[in-house]
Length: 215
Image 1 (tube, rainbow, N blue to C red):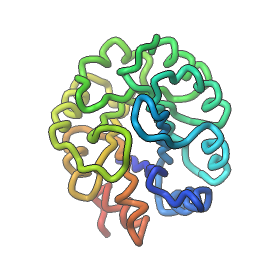
Image 2 (cartoon, rainbow, N blue to C red; image 1 turned 60 degrees about the vertical axis):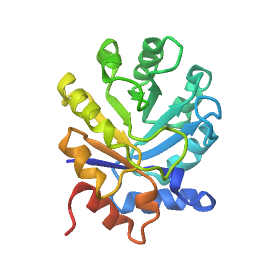
Image 3 (cartoon, helix red, strand yellow; image 1 turned 120 degrees about the vertical axis):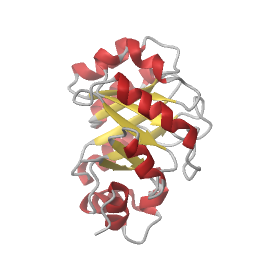
């Protein structure tokens, strides 16, 4: 079944804990946490303390996406805060393999994210250490952007490169009821959506519609 991961970047920050609890009850499979450092991307968002604060409200794994130039600086903090999955960016200038190994040593799933301009082929050297690959279908930094249909071939290419039983394909950016089926058709296994879910009046129905279940 397709996993749906609501991104709290679009949630009500004044009621973040209850919003996490509510969206879990609505059928979320994961809670996606977009960590932006103001350097790797322009925006500045959450730190480890937010992950720790929402952990008790979530009945599903916390999926933490580190959009950071220096993820090594706070990696231990996010691990200790309760992250269940941690995704780094392939574009960071650091020993990525050592960080992926460190994540997995703590029993946490490890992922690698690709910006729109980054080719799928870059993950080949990292596949033995990956539980997931995250394809960005917008330029990372802000929610509410329009889906980049040019990224669909990358999703399909990844599907042909990896073993779906070992490595999942996440897609994040402009996900709604129109773009979701396109991603699924090309091999996505997890859809990350913020504005579409949290901007809806019926979160459960929004989640079902992303899976293609409108009943």
